[in-house]
Image (cartoon, rainbow, N blue to C red; front, side, top):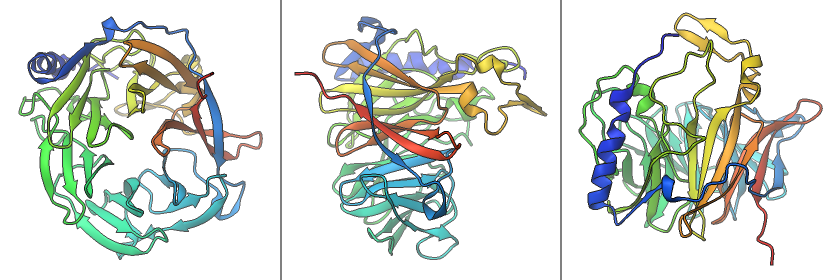
Length: 373
């Protein structure tokens, strides 16, 4: 695949940095952090989800998860039509939702959360927020206005923020969209110091993808472009609070797409979370040490990883940073391509698909080891 120069897109980081210095209450730089790439952050297994057969079996690829004290764990396949529910010990309880156009039916689930005891589903197929009871019964549907979808996180007062920006135009739009769940109305669009900048590069579809947080301070959100470690914190009222810029040695900013016939896959950000101690958790999809042992499939427009070999090509990496102490607390790496972050009752957790000796897929949830006394 011919490398594509995307310097025009990521030059926006400079604009973002200058704007941050003028408007954010706090501007940090990764260069000011004490970094330790060899420090392993301690994690412990919390639960395994998925049965060997029957209704509780799961698909490992592109699974997403949510958690609530009332309902336990909710798993869905990204782009799927059903939601599997497991209790806190990992036992399968039931599945809700099905494919279709009617109430309680889905065409393509992009994200979900449990808010005020109700299951709130981002339905990408119909571009709507669908609200279900804890038992999965249909309550309401709220069409949203933004042309693209992404992920949602609750910010209180019956509101969610959707993280999304469109690649269909040549203009960078605000990536944060405040949605009132009672009406579906987008009441505020915010979060980009460089909104309105023109995109001229062919890579805009990738370069404009954003990731948001699963956990933050009440009434705030974190977000960042997937191709750079630059991240920002905003209030749900549109106030620019914190900005972290600069580079990380293990997360080089993408300035051109790699030639996958010869070069390792690019590192991209897949999730953010802020814990109660003001530690920022960041998950990345990065190259597996043995990435070059995977024989890629050559397609008309480039190369693709053969089905079933993603874990040999990619890893999931977690880094945790103390924003108070300007210190990197460590990293943890899973030999899995599709890990992500989870809000587990106000504490971040990481879930990754893994296979047992019989190659049965399960979603394994990991939490931080409690601090030693």
